[in-house]
Length: 84
Length: 369
Image 1 (spheres, rainbow over the protein chains, first blue to last red):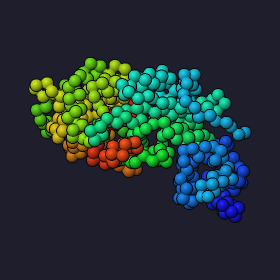
Image 2 (image 1 turned 45 degrees about the horizontal axis):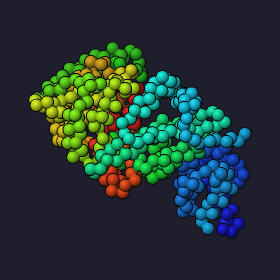
Image 3 (image 1 turned 135 degrees about the horizontal axis):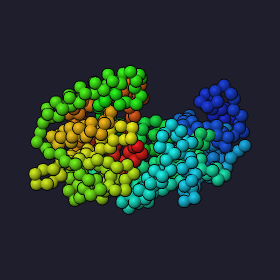
Image 4 (image 1 turned 60 degrees about the vertical axis):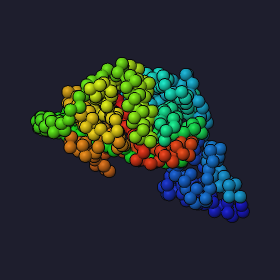
């Protein structure tokens, strides 16, 4: 995946987080989402469903780990790796 | 400061941590801090006659237990085959551990072969939904108000005497309804610690012939579920034919807060008269127990009461955002969902008309106070 496309994915995730989690506050690509307890369980479920609907990817059990979801950057890289 | 949260199997040393966690997660639940009772529940679950293991996991944040989930196995008869499915139970996580709470549920779905659960519609069912179960149906919620004067959340205490007078009227009306329901079915009370004999196995086999999907309510299961070890004692009503064969039974519980629950009511197929007789007697017993309301949650089937008979006996079916009592929350909407490993079993189980199911059959009722 090209860097531009990776940035587009990150932008979409940041937009989703702003709309559903942080309100007007912008989220940086390296802000920790899980280890700081930012995401609730329902927001986690909704984020996974968003990734499925927006990017057509299915998160497997093995991929559902903190390392893949702790930052916007990590989530974007996971999406990128699955889209090839 | 970033945390390192470990999701791992429950160990005996986690008992104090989980006992402390419950009241922190459920501060409004009166029994959440009842350590002796919760310990007794797990001892009882450990004697579950189903030959499959119970699983438990915890979230451990630097030695502090911040989340917990258990998986309880129960047996079902699905399209003629015995199916063991696990139900998530005692699911809790502190705020701030949302991702890990979902990871707990993921551990559940990784560990178990099949899943069946009856949940209050809401956050937990949405989390479970991520892992692919199919919603079968919402349970019917039959509610009968007996005595508003005993309702703890009555808006004004001044209304209490008035409500109690009204209750006398309702009770008199119930006597008339009971006569009108008529029938010659004799209902007796059984001792739940000794009554579950082979006649219950025979009734179950007949019921399983009429309902393609049904929790395996053999005498062994019923002895465990409602017998001497059960954490909350119940009342058992039975209806028998003159030759002594079992035509139906009902399991009742009146809680400490004076709520009456019909936990289970099962009859031989198409015996509306037996179901009516059991309901009439159940209402009479709840009056005697001084319950202020009766709740009966079930999926209609050939071995359950018919909705119109419940209405004739004064039950109502509140739905949506309406509560049946003044100032009360809307009635809890309970939904049955399944994810069974065997495709043929799953295909049979997703059809609501195939099911016989009562609140008392599953994990949702294990925590009825």
